[in-house]
Length: 358
Image 1 (spheres, rainbow, N blue to C red):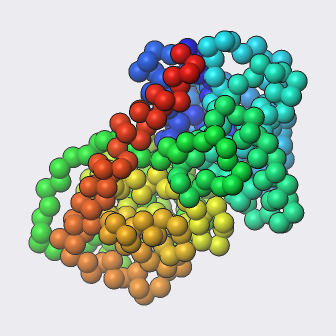
Image 2 (image 1 turned 90 degrees about the vertical axis):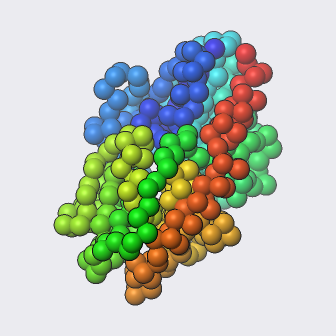
Image 3 (image 1 turned 45 degrees about the vertical axis):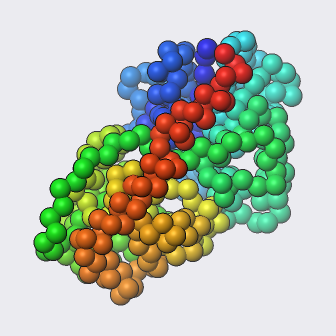
């Protein structure tokens, strides 16, 4: 069997996509990846990715030009594409799946699965009429897909017909932690992923300046606020590292931050990798008000909730006892084992998805 991944960014270094790739590798399927190399720093030097487009970065006005260009290039790439009988295209997000839908109008043999990480219509602050139009196109794109995959139940909507939910839960890297119940002089927190003001960098700068906490940070520096944060003396910036490397570093942390600007609609529906990472590791998560996942954190008592904009209430997380930190972490760990393990959430569901094509 052959799986062709199509993504408007990298595949092999992307946390969620890499799990799908590993699943395919374990079965010795042929894998191909067509990608958009947004930044040279994330190039796959093993030559496993074919870049249809290069440049543009991860943010800014340049994307107004690069997104249409990417979709146009994908359309022409697959317009006359000869898809093999045992091949399925795994299209990730609207900017990859929509041009496939258009190409399918002329190339009837195209078959694709549509994995939606972030709904394009609500990813940016767009006028309502444009959002409605994109959503209409998205409905068409989903209906033409073999199957639609969502990252969380809250992402499912009335425009879905055939779909399945595969959460962003990681493989199990859990290590029993030796906890010193003597109160430490300082807390250690982890921040990872895309590092930008929309992910709380401005608030974290203020928190870092006015506390004696330390921070372990990994990921892509998207804007000036991220660069200012990692320049602080109590921040240990690791750069762009693998998930396995990050998990080894995180074991010394008291909690993992997962902040999203709630003024953006897509953020209010965020299905954060970091929430599930924290659950798996048995470490509390710190998120902010105004998000759907806040209810999960509160109901499971697996973390703490603060305002998105820094204020004095943030200091309360510094005064929580080590015992309380550990208890919240173990609450999350129990839920991971019950509902979100890699075996039940990924492997078993992918077995069902790919069975018809074997």
